[in-house]
Image (cartoon, helix red, strand yellow):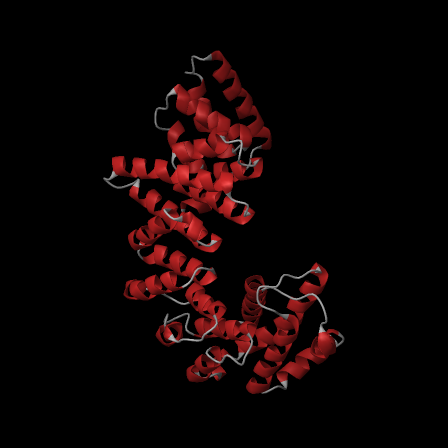
Length: 372
């Protein structure tokens, strides 16, 4: 792995650390000020002359000064300076990953005297070090230890490699936590056993009043993934009923919640199902902002294309036209043009012809990443 890639990974990890634990905007302190005034070349030379132990200590000192868990920066420019200050140190540490023994890294990850930011960086370092062999067994053992900060455990769950052998561990984590750790645990579980994740999610969504926003959000996404998978199986009728109930539950959250992030999560979950009914509910709802309707159309444009190429009824064409009036997509111009000539409803035919012209002039390309 070249130095440029390691620098990029270190920068990304550093930014992710601050997104997960927040940054404090006041009283940068002597440790931070010392590095802010240094020339870049001088700073890099100083970093190069540090031993591994000194480098980790310096990261920890900086982290203690500039980061506080669950605290958001009040001054964005100061927050950016804090992030930039840590990047060269974390990147340099990542370059030295093969110089550090696994047992030493794991010991520091479990060391409560070090800052959460430092320990999260070391989790990332361990995962990077083992990216080829996916060996995360010893790192995952830390999840079983009492007294480890939930933020650190959450970082392990979010980045380590999990298999079907870890289903029991992930279920225990989800049941024991109500915040970001449970969120990541349920997210990872849905990736390796969507049915198990759905069972837990069903329980969470049946008792929303007693659950945290993070747990509800994870349950929404896991349920959407399950329904999308099941809609392609033989359990079609049962899935349709489950989907209707889930969409109803999601809209109840959208209507009643004061948490904007949770409301958006509910909309994203409905969109992720990818069915015509789910997309229709979004684009016809007065509760969903235009930008999120456009997101749903973009995410599901392949579904729209399949409708147009599958001998659509006029109601189905009307649905696609309504979607393209929100977000014109170039890839749908040809299939829509082919069915427009057969439309008997003059109003619908006019709308279809108009949206085709707009899409040809202003439409975006379909985003095929959603098919991956």
